[in-house]
Image (cartoon, rainbow, N blue to C red; front, top):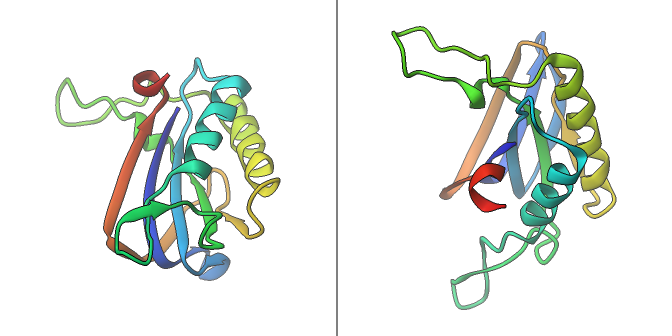
Length: 149
């Protein structure tokens, strides 16, 4: 499982020219699901995400978590995080989880986050989405379950 986390001042997602999710200060998280991912892995990733201390404290140090700053989440399913570009110029997505597994785990992650964060907005699984954001920092972090667990 891969989370691409961007600390944002605000972010939104549109599907067919309609805004379906918008947040203020918080994290925009692109979520890639691998064919071997499980709910146990999702639980660990969510714990790491929610505990990530990358907001500035009063001394300007990145020492505060999403909960510490009453931050919000925008969660976007993104199978292209598993693009394999080793051969040729056309990426392969064979390592991405099948759509049924990926959607089930995406929904599971959304519910797990909603248990801890008051504002959790989402994209639309499998839709053509347009994402707008103001990256704060810029600050972008990649969490890969294969590297951290």
